[in-house]
Length: 417
Image (cartoon, rainbow, N blue to C red; front, side, top):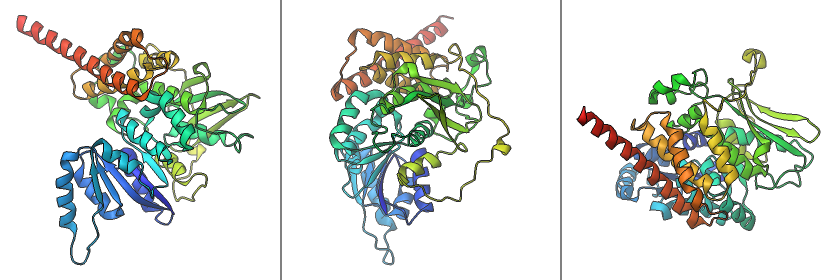
């Protein structure tokens, strides 16, 4: 039985991971959970899974969590309380928990970086759904992987598809898949994209896009931030950078193709021109399960893919005019060093401002481009962890300041009118 630590247990990835644990109680057990502020759901998860340790990102909520758990204890159910830890150090404790065999990282954004590094340094294998960790700190993470011997198992559908396809090559037994070392014979990666909420909108129609529009994904059920990223295609741009770090290909050999049905999750082209693809219904549980069970596969009762039911599979090239975030991501990846960290942080902050309706959807790429341009003179080509953390905070502040300046100008114009 594999012992699992779930970071971000109350989020989309975390809840689906725990659903899988429920479906396969003979295969997995939960030893550690971490969450942000959703105490009600966290308490329910603790009561069901009996973890050994629970971490709260907001340590001020620890007393309330302890009180809620003590209230559940009865004479008939005198279950011992898990160890409760909080703050960044608490997240590191859950990530490196001694009895955990696998750490599932579902914390959204760059907040997952330090716990991921803690897990790697503890020698844990990771199911990585937090792409921002590699994007912001690939030059830091990859040497740590090599040092510890940990393995990153991609838990998002696209990189899981690539990982699975690579295991169909003759080099599967010797290649260090998903560690940044290029696999012999791998010529090209094609990342498929649904096109997001605005795939059928024109570029001019995006001027009127609302938060409700951007968070209504046609195929996938995901959190708000990643759904907005999908609408802007930044999600795919970030995945290009992640694929570069995971699989070692340069950016000229990593492509994006719009595939509205989301049945083919990604493809690889080999040196003899053969193309391998992984297919399935759009359901995040499948790549998560594969990470959890790897290198085995488990029998599931899940819906089987029927291509006659799908009917057709279509593809088209993405429009860079409609999706400017895509080119921004390629440019940041090629610049390397600390630039991907700036791109990622600026995007996270811009999306947060959009979700709060402080900026328009089309302002997101403008905010990101502005931060990246300002960072060019200060780019660190070979960053350490402190460099990454510093530019992460700088880029977020740069976006907030730009939003605030725009808000003040609008207020002044309104008063003058």
